[in-house]
Amino acid sequence: MTSLREAGRALRRRPLGATAGLLHRTFSGSGGSPRRRVSGFGEEPESWAGAPGSDAGQADAGAPQRTLGEAVRLLRGGRAALGEVADRLRGPAPDVEVPDGAGFHTHSFACKAGARDYRLYVPSLVTRRAEGLLLMLHGCTQSPEDFAIGTDMNALAEREGLIVAYPAQTSAHSMMQCWNWFRPGDQMRGAGEPAILAGLVEHLGEVYGLASGRVYAAGLSAGGAMAAILAETYPDLFEAVGVHSGIAPGAASDVLSAFAAMRGEFGHAGELERDAPLPRMIVFHGGADRMVHPANAERIVRAARARLPQGEIREEEGYAPGGRAFRRLLIEGGGGVPEVESWMIDGAGHAWSGGRPGGSFTDPEGPDASKEMMRFFLREPVSRAA
Image (cartoon, rainbow, N blue to C red; front, side, top):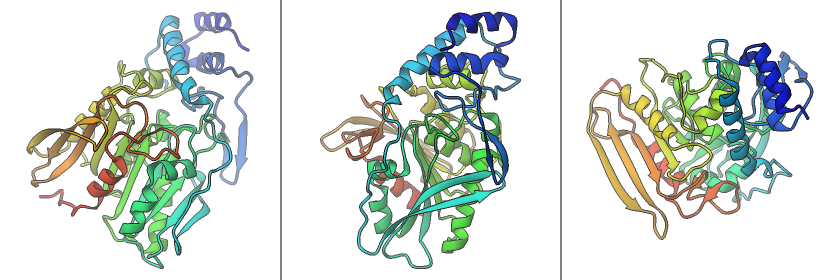
């Protein structure tokens, strides 16, 4: 394995950005060079082994250069945190039970930006036209099947007549099966993973005749970070977005800044300065999350609030039935109803609040994030022009 001493010598010879791959392999326990995968859309670089699932060689040229000590601290901290999930790397897909007449189908979608497989839940009531679409983005080491079981979102979609798409991020694109939320090329409209996911949504909208304003997205951890990126890059496509234990767009631009953001250290990373309104947003985060610091939820909410007209802000406290205490922040946008909701759950870790024990990264004791997100998504939308 590449030694830390070798990485240190390399850092003294050249900038950190040029040796990011070497440092990353030092802590991921991997050697060699990144391979290239040839697809129908040209050559795409595969990720370096390790987490947060990056192509570590794609460092942002404008990112601040860090000292070796800072780099070592961040990479050690990142490896320690992600070590908690490394043993959960995807095995055989679990069986997902569906009611009579419903389906949980396997498909693949391809566009100029790339391709992904996905699972699609189609409720028993849906034939040709669905009431809406929910895009569900899993976290690192999870699979669509695992995420569907843990969130129990299919059951809620069955009652509401929504189709649910679960895109799959595989080790071909990220060794830990994370969405690449920190890479500059995956934080913009018209390119990378946002373009693939938006293309999938548009494709399904055509197939199922979705009405405008009936498309939603939600994700956990790296999936939550990507959901927040979709809110920024495709606000015209999504009516509302749910971010659970996620990270704000623009908080990172390479591997080291990603680990820093996960620790709640944002350094020189500024919040995105954009004027376009965001979709309505609901945010969940565990107050005791050791994987992604709760400061990330505050950053997401602050950025969303800055785009709204001045409205009433209310804070509530409560308890989940037989479970955890929580604080809920409700931010209106001038229309008399909340445009942003933020749930901070006391004592909860890095897990889907109120999730089912059959899935990974779930916390059955918390308030039910799935039910609350579905409620928030399906309420009568308020005109942003008003």
